[in-house]
Figure 1 (cartoon, rainbow, N blue to C red):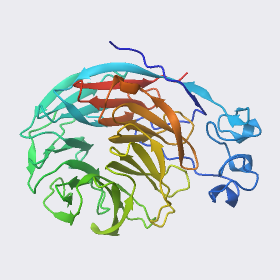
Figure 2: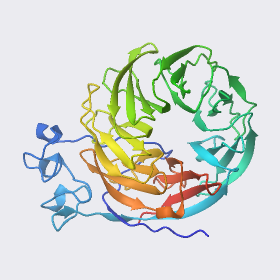
Figure 3: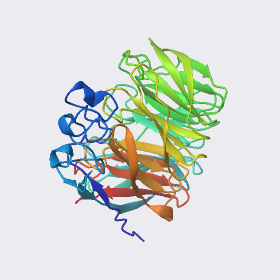
Length: 415
């Protein structure tokens, strides 16, 4: 039954968003210097917002309407518009779909989905119709378990390809043909691959691959679509996922490695594809995911993590020099995956959390999050992606729910 999930948030503003999906940049603070000092000083009504510092987010303190991004101050708190999230299509995608990637596979300007099925050893290609509905265009059988995947143009031909992690079976590349179909799997020998991310590791404009093995991170460098050159980084604890971002503002990409021991390891980029393991930051008991994103709009990347065993999401605000303030924690039910986007249209990134339930933590300014919505036990997704699935300038969600053998679409039906 496609029960409607009408989950109400009080939200602010309606800025434009990227029509192809992805994570928007938060609006940088404007106004005097005190608007950037992480303190409620000057004429601010809340932390670095209000007064001359620009609009505050939902529920933050205000005195007059101009203190709020929504233009509406009521009862001393910023108010806003209403957002609704409704249940869309439920798609069959194999036996236990557990990973997702979103991209335009067939060049029709609509977002499509790839779903990795670990048990069924396949990848299902779901082509978008542009209205939030999808059709299964093809199923790509694989020789191993499709435990993770990444979508990117890996050979420079203008078509989106897929890199698929097969666990102990290593990894493979599926070359996109540009029509929603893919060629035969091309093996990438070199050991186990439990997760995969596409990142430009050496700043040459080509997307490389960062994979996690049993006790290592393996970096594979792209040479016109070939990935022969690699660098192995030993990790004492089991690495779960890798993401990238310039954490110290030196113009070189750094890596974040989520460790099963409840830490995030920062791997410093030295330029030219060289890396050096750096600090390990304790953020919980079992970190599954760590993303680099500017949550507070100060131009420095922050870190947001999902801790499955600790039942929380942690935010570490970056200072722009590779250091971070101690984490702030937000309750979540066994979070496994994260997607960051401006769901409430107030110009501040929010965090979708997939775990024993699906929820959204709303960004309220200053790098802080607030409880937004939770779907309860109706679904238990292990993967989530945010994209404009209906062409309406709003971030919808697609989630993989292996317990129900479905990929589910949730529409952002703000009103």
